[in-house]
Length: 130
Length: 268
Length: 226
Image 1 (tube, rainbow over the protein chains, first blue to last red):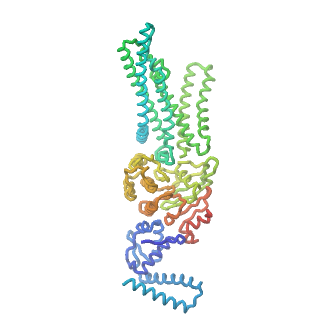
Image 2 (cartoon, rainbow over the protein chains, first blue to last red; image 1 turned 30 degrees about the vertical axis):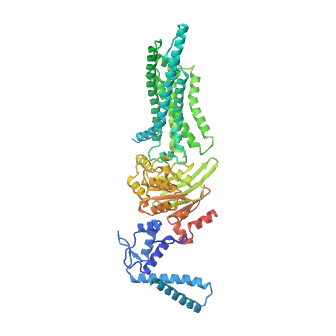
Image 3 (spheres, chains in turn red, cyan, green; image 1 turned 90 degrees about the horizontal axis):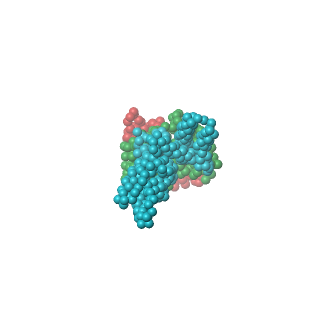
C-alpha cells in the first residue's frame, strides 16, 4: 500500500481520502476489518499520531466503527457507503469543472469530448483486460 | 559497586601502556646494572694492577648513576603525563567518550574517584615493582662483586637513604611514607582540577589553560606565603598544625573545584 | 514534557543561543529545524548537561533532567572506534541501569547488525543505526536525536523512519534536530524553527497544512528565504 502524499495537505485527511476511495471502489467491503493503526503507520512511514487522527476522523464521519479493544471495521451502513461514493464523484467533478471553466469550453463541446474520451478509455480497458 | 566497575574499566585501559612502561623501566635498569658491573670490574682490575688501595664501592654508586636516575625520572614523568591523559584521552576526537561518561545516570564524581584510584594504583604498583627490582639488583650487585672478590661497603638501606629520589619514594618511616603518598595524591588532584577547569572554560575563552593555571597557582601559593610569613612568629607545634591545615586546605580546595567543574560546567 | 525555558549560550565571543524557549511533548515527535550552524546541537547538548547553558532552565515533566529517563543519540559514535558493537552493549549494560538487552537484541535484529563488527568498519548509515539502537535500548521516556539522517544512505534512512512509526517508539517523546526535513516530513508532529540562535516559529505541522495549506518546507522557505 503506497500513498503519494501531498506535503501541503494534512496527512490525516489524505489517509481518510485514501480509505474513502477504497470503500467506494469496494476494495474494502462493508464490515471488513481495517488494518491496525500501528501497521498502517509503519507501512505508510508516517506518524502514528497522524494515523490515530485519521481513524478518529473516519469514526466521526461514521466510515468505520470501533468497539473496545477490537480492530476497527468498515461500516455496514449502506447509506454511508453510498454517500462516500457520491461525495468522491462530486469532488472530482468539481475539480474537473473548475479547471475546464478556465478554458472557456461550451457545454456541448465538453459533453461531446467527454463521451468520446470516456468511450475510448473503456475500450482500452477492455482490450488490455482480455 | 559502580565505582569498582568504573575502576575496572579504567584499569583495563591503562594496562597496556603501563606494562610497557614497567618493562622499559626494569629492562633499562638491569641493562645499566650489567654495564656498571662490567666497567667497575674492569676498573678494579686496573687499580689492582697499579696498586692503589683506596677503592670503596657502594650500591649507592650504582643507583646514583645517570641511567638509573633517568629511568626513575621517565617513570615519574609518565605518571604525571598520564594524570593529564587519563582525562584528555576521553575528550579525543569528535566522538568523545567523555560524552558517554557524562551521560551516565550515576554521580559524575564516581568517574573522578575511579580515575584518581587508577592513578594511585599505578603509583603504588610502580613503587612496589621498583622496590622488588631494587632488591634483585642489590642481590645481583653484591653477588657479582663477592664472586669477583671485590670489596663492597654499605648496606641496601643506607644506599636508599642517601639517594635523592629513592629516599623520597621509600622513606625510612611508615608515617613519612603516608605523608609522601598524601603529597602524591595532592599533585594528582591538582592536575585533575586543572584539566577539569580547562575543559570547562575552553568554550568561553582561548585563555582557558592559563586562566586555570592562574587560579590553581594562587590557591597553592596562599598557604605557602602564609607559612613563610608566620614561620618566625610561631612555635614548632603551631607550625606543624599550620602545615597540617594547609595540606587539608589544599586537598579540600582541589576536590571542591574538581567537583564543581565536573558536575556543573564541564563542556564536551 | 520537556520544557526549555529562556536558555542562552555564548561560545567565546559569539552568542550562539539567544533566549530560546520551546516544549516537546511526550508521545510526540518534535523537530528542531535550522540551517547548519544555528545551534541545534548545542541546544540538545545543553538539555543533556553536556555543554551547560549560561542561563535558563530545562525541565522534564516539571523536574530537573533525570538521565535514566532521557537518552541522547549524537550524530557520531561516543565509543572508541576499535570497539565492537558487543563491547558497546556491554558498557551500556554495566553503566546505564535502564538499558534493556532484549530491546537491544530486537533492534540489532531489525537493523540487521552484526554484534561482532567493529565500529570503525561500519558505514555511516550502519553506525547511525548502532547509535540509535544504543539510545533506544536505554528505554527512555524521551529520546533526543542529533541529525539522525545526515549523510546516510537512503535504505538506512528508510529503516530508521520505519522504526519511528513502529511500536518501539510508542509513548516516547522524541526531539530530533535536522536541516533536511524532507526525510521525516510525515513523521513530525511539531516543528520548532531556529534561526540565528532564536526560535522563529513553533507550530503543529498538521495544523499548518490544514489551515494554511503549507508544507514544512514552505514555512522554512518563508523563514530562511532559501
